[in-house]
Amino acid sequence: MKSKQINKLLALNLRRLRKKSGLTQEQLAEIGGFSYKYLQEIEAGRVSITIKTLARFSEILKAHPSAFFQTVRGNGTAKKNGKTAPS
Image 1 (cartoon, rainbow, N blue to C red):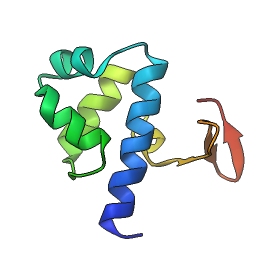
Image 2: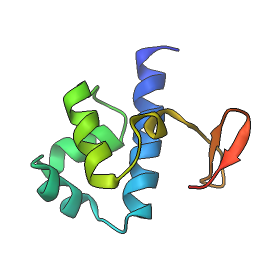
Image 3: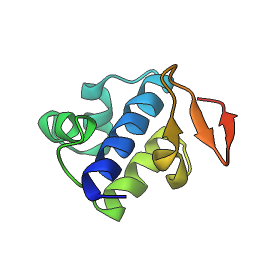
């Protein structure tokens, strides 16, 4: 998998998990200590993030880091190990 594909996958899952948590981009950025612009770039899949940033998102959104790399179906559900996982 190429880095652009990884960025897009992470972006889709970040957005899905953020919305599931009921947070706006502005709220997640403020809680995480990120700029709103940076979060927009991440959710657009235009930038790569560090492990430290991934760990921060994981902590805030109460999601295992692997949740950010699950395949996302068109209906917004995540696919894990060949089975549909709750989103």
